[in-house]
Length: 97
Picture 1 (cartoon, rainbow, N blue to C red):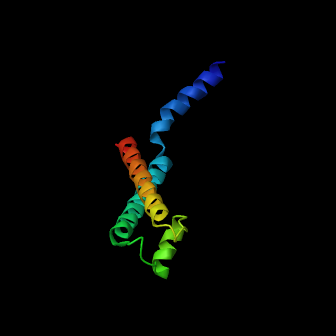
Picture 2 (picture 1 turned 45 degrees about the horizontal axis):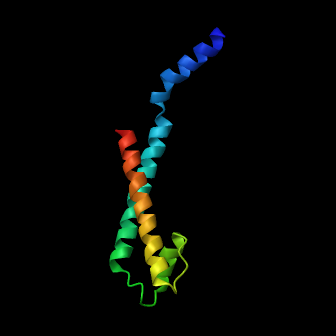
Picture 3 (picture 1 turned 90 degrees about the vertical axis):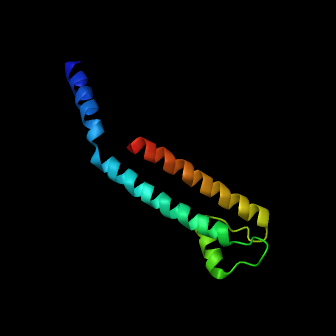
């Protein structure tokens, strides 16, 4: 029993020093910032009622948006993905501080 308690204490002491987790969190934050930037640019320039260029379709496919024929679905999916990315970014930034 004492060995188990000692192991748990050691784990609790070492947990805040997990530099791999901090590094992964920072990498995820950078990835989310890039995603948010890309989605913001796309939302600003996109006319969902006009035909999409191949370049725009490629970006949309990157985010699993392939309903090119329905402007409402395209716009909704873009905004949901953007909102989800922003929320995750804020949570990670709060956890890091």
